[in-house]
Length: 141
Image (cartoon, rainbow, N blue to C red; front, side):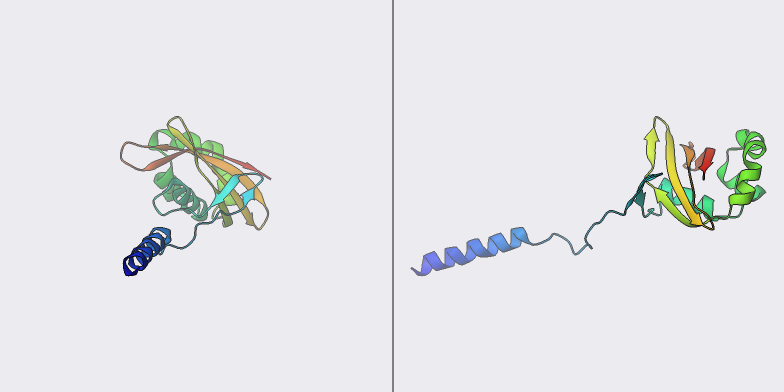
């Protein structure tokens, strides 16, 4: 009878070990879905969403263009987006959507909630040196 109880205890112990979580990581959760930009995410420091959020939160200047736009596109980019970015950046109240890979390009949706609600997307390309290059931006109100 003693052997049966020991085996029973061993089986219970084994089941408890199997059912215990493997790590003490916090529970995962999903942020809400924004009807304009899709799934909202908390950008990871190394991800394109974080890079795009940092670009939106930075003041627009020549240094901004140098940091985010490839030199071959800088003149056309400034000509096309100067007025828009001058009035938009630095943005606050930024929500980032989950990036979507489209061939070799990444589209990142965003919403700006302050001072007025606007939403849009940025198209980025991964360059050979590991940096991201902003190719276009669109804004809707």
